[in-house]
Length: 455
Image 1 (cartoon, rainbow, N blue to C red):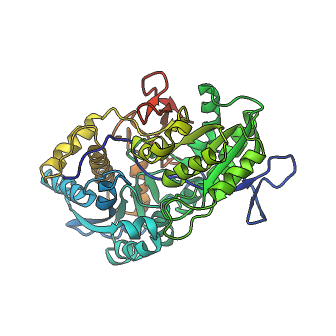
Image 2: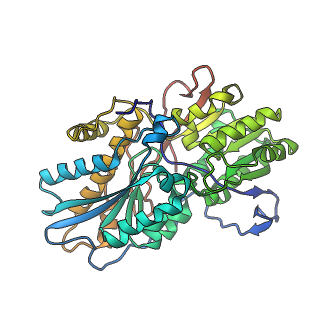
């Protein structure tokens, strides 16, 4: 078994925009082109279409087939470049076996078809993973696909937009992906299972509460080109973060996108991005570029003698990603974060790890592997629970409605979540934290992970 690491890692975040906040001006430009701004804000996403009313594929009188897409991060985890997510496929099969041992789903046997991507296909060059998506959708013809941790939004889009198959995911996605999925995308059972637009809308106000942002502050934004390990959060920045910064009285003086050549984990042009914000006299930088790209950005700031107040969100606030900032920990010291990865393991996590333990998957409590094992388990359990509540013939529309009624939605740690007809992202809470160079970790502000409800 690979060495266990302290928990707090999950999906991935990153975007790209150039900004000019001015009345009547172009709000966002990319490659010199003025982009339209839609006032979607950070509230409820567009009401989802309720799915097909034709019989659900993958269902016979005796069986219900589900597929799973997961990734093998073993080598990267051993190098400290990724969290140890364990063996999602083996965990999912253990949960399916447990469900079947207790009578199955509505009298039917649950059948799992698992597809494991290598890290190159999943993260460095996601186009290579499209073949796995096609196998999981077109060939398996499942009732639904479980998309496990550390997989990019491009695969979710392939499953539930390109192919009209329901997906049970776990990460942050923006409003655009949910809207395009027409109700077929759900996200549970982690603190990161919160819609990006909701989190980004709340971000400035939370920074005001933390003392990191005040009215009149000059703000810069650094993001990264979507693709690879970076989830597209352009919509969340344009329609949630920017309006909220304006509402908080902050002045956005510039933003920069880090181009990310195919296969690059660090992206490029960090010094150009930093110089732009330095020239604009930015005082507070909202860093949405993530992981190695974020750490390299902070290094560039140090090299150019630029020392703003750093604020970040999501994966950058995990202690796994904190390892990337070790070379620049003095510069990163005191950074503010909106964290979503709670660490108080739930009873559901313990129960799931007992199930996985019967299949030989065992991790120390509190480690990355422990929480990701619980996450995979809960994704399958929530899906199975919803399938088991459907009366009469099974259709996608009925499955969507059944999932929307799951209450509460279990989580690996922190407060339980909720679904409803306009909200397919289960998580509702975040907490505030600051990075400590002394410990090389993120510490909750106030000493405890105080859950803050996000509208």
